[in-house]
Structures are given as C-alpha cells and as structure tokens.
Image (cartoon, rainbow over the protein chains, first blue to last red):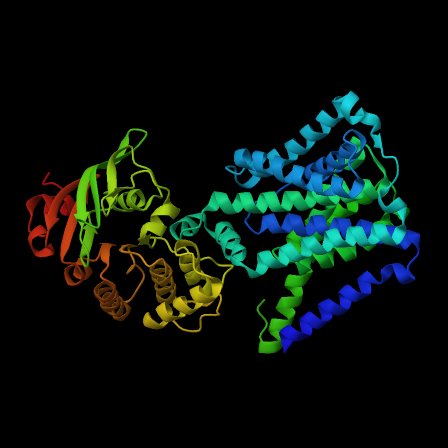
Length: 313
Length: 239
C-alpha cells in the first residue's frame, strides 16, 4: 500500500513538473531550469558519495561537458542535440581515463585530486585560445530549439529525470549493495567478492557522464559560455550543500535540498549579490554539525519515533 | 589433492618477518586449528591465504591452481571465505543484505535468488529478524551474520578468525556445534584461529602451531599440546 502511494505521488509530481511551461512564464522557467540543473548535479554527486568517495570535481565535469558540446557545434559543425550526446560520451571517456588513475585514492586525497582536476580543465580551456576561445569564451550561432522557453525547460527536465532514474536504479539494484559495502568496510566487501575498483569506476563514470550531460544542456540552452561560467565553483559548492541539507545517500534527499536551496538562492542572489555564497558555507557547517543525516534523515527519525513511541535521543 | 595448500609462504613487513616459510595443506571436510601465542602471525597467515595481503615469497595453491597473487574478491569467487577477528558489520545495510553480498558478488546471483539463499543460511544458523539494522544485534548475532555472509559465498574453504571471542560458555558450545555441523554438511575445509584451548580440543581434528611466524608443530591437539617446543612457546623459555 505504502509503495503504491509513493509511486502515485511521484507520478503526480512528474505530471505537474512536465506541465510547468503551461502556467509559468519565461523567468520562472529559467529559475526552474537552474534548480533542475543543480538538482541533477546534487543527485549525481550523492551517487558517488554512496561509495564513500567525496568528489569536489562536479564543476570540472560540468564545464568539460559544456565545452565539449559547444566546441563540437562550433568547430565540428555538429547539430546541437547530437553535441549533447557527444559531450556526454566525451565526459564518460575522460572520466574513465581519469578514474583509472585517481580511484586508487581515498578520502581527502581523492577529494583534493578531483578539485585540482577541475582547475586544470579550466586552465587548459583558458589557454587553448585558438581552439576554445580562451577567457572570452564561446558564442554559439543560436541556443538549441531556437531558444524556446518550454523546449529548453523540457530538455533540462529530461536530463534531470534521467539522473533521477539512474540514481533510483543505483538504490534498487546490486549497485546499492556494492557501493554501501565499499563505503562501510572495503575489507568485508573484498572478502565477499566485490570488485571494489570496478564498482568505483562504474559509479565515477556514470556520475561524470551525467554531470557532463547537464553541462552540455546548459551551454546549448544559453548559447554561450566562458571558462569562468562553465567551471564556476558554484557548480561544485551548491550541489554539495543541497545534498547535505536534504540528506545524503538517497535520491530524495538531494532533490529536497535542491528545491529548498535553489529557491532560497534566487532570493539571496537578489538580496546579497556578492555575499550569498557565505550563506551556503554556513548551511553546510550547520547541517554537518547538527543534522548529519539532513532533512530526510530527520523526517525518517521523526516518523520512526512516532511509530514506536520511543525517543532515541 | 589438497583443497588449499601453501609452500614456503613468507610475509615480511620492512624487516619484521610476520610469517616465515610456512607450508601446510587443508583437506576437504577437515577442521584445522591454527594456534600460537599473540603475535605469532596467525591472522597475517589468513590474510595471505585469503588475499587481503600479498606475500613476500612462497605460494598459495587452491585445488591445484596457483592463487598466490590473486586479489581477494577473486579468491572469494573461487571458494575461499573468511570472517575477521574484529567484527566487520556493514552498518548501513540490513542484516539480510549483509549476508546477501556474498551470494550476489561471489556467486553472481540475482538479488531475489541471493535473498532466498541468504534466508535459508540464516535459518540454518538460527539468525532471525533479518530486516534489522546491524546495530541492534548482539555479539553472537553479529558473529553468526558474518559466518552467514561467508557461507553465502558457497565456499569450499572457510577461515574463522577468533569467532568465539566475546561469547559466553553457552554461546561457545552452541557455536562449536554449529561449526561442526556446517563443516560436515557442506564438506568444508575449515581453518579456525582460537585462543581457548578447550575449543580447539573439541572442535579440531588437527592443529598447526605458529610461533614468531614459523610453523613449529603440526598434528592432533593431544599430541601437539605435549610437544616441548609448543609448551615453551606458550609459557616462555626457562630463563
């Protein structure tokens, strides 16, 4: 019964989101796109986190996808939609090569390396002036689908739904067992036949592909980008804050966090244009200190306590 | 042919030789005790045979196949399973899922098949309420869960590293009977590391004794326990 209820709720929510363009104007649709992009990044970050690996390289893969897609159109004459597929494949291949090297690292060594890689991508794009357009960035002939607001919304939504679908599959399949076992205890995992490197590589490549795809969708929707936009540290920081606030190691947590912080960030941007990032920093600190399982964890605990009538704290 | 054997197996940690040229063999259906004073290299030895550590020299052979440098997850698939001296529950997985991973990853079972098989194994070990979190388990239940996880690998060789530690005498008796039944019914070769000699006497048909990384004696417990070198190893040399 409970399962049926949650499927119904998901179907209803999907229908509402699909119908957004029918009752929202161009500006709210653009805000919704931005929130959906961050949501997809937050979910993809969490998917790798389920293995215990903390990536700070989201912006790197996002930017890489943006540039692969933009340059495929500009230099390769590819049509915009194909270029998104191309950029996703490019992110997949790059992350596979990188993963082979860096997935031997653990904990903060892995995190710092992903952060450094992001900077390296950005510097390379900055300096390949003739090919990449350098610091001034690139301008596409026109946004995908002629810049139609509903079409752009649905494109971004498709990217998000794909991410949610993959994340849901991760939760329901043996990926869940593999990644959780790796996170909890690598020694036990190995003794039970888990090929740790293989599963880390699968998770890293899939999440990187999704991040590259969202970058490509973003650049094709705006029709231009610069290294500082495409590799903006916000694309790492915001998804991280969203996932932490909503609740890590789940699909629903990052989604909830993205809606809350996404709406809040639009408001904060207007109120404190140059200082709003400080607020995210505070949110991350407060959540880690007082609510390590995030809002979803808090809700689960409340429900469980309500059911058993026992207070655990 | 022996199920599992080693020849001249050696592990040195930058100068300290933890396991020194150990050769042994285990047969089907046999319960072998691995004993020795603290720091004798028993756990290191199991790490080497199960692939958690790689040896400095020597070889490990499983059913005639050289597996000296095979990674742990491959050995698990071949049929070598183990538990750990320190408990290793996967605390973000349910009890049933803790057991299932052995079947899913070592035997390539679907989640559904793995769940069914794991429930059977848990029933056999009298472990119930399988949708609990591992934090709700008693120490005996955690030990059972870890044995169940090892059995879900469908092993031919099983190592139990101090599985009795932390159990009271009733629980120990129960565990001894359980291990004997498992070994008999599944025709397993079982290697048991244990400090309580009463357990070794009751449980094993044969023991090997390690001291400072070397194999110093081998044979039935009754014989080995009278061996002067073994007595000296345990009680210390006469000053």
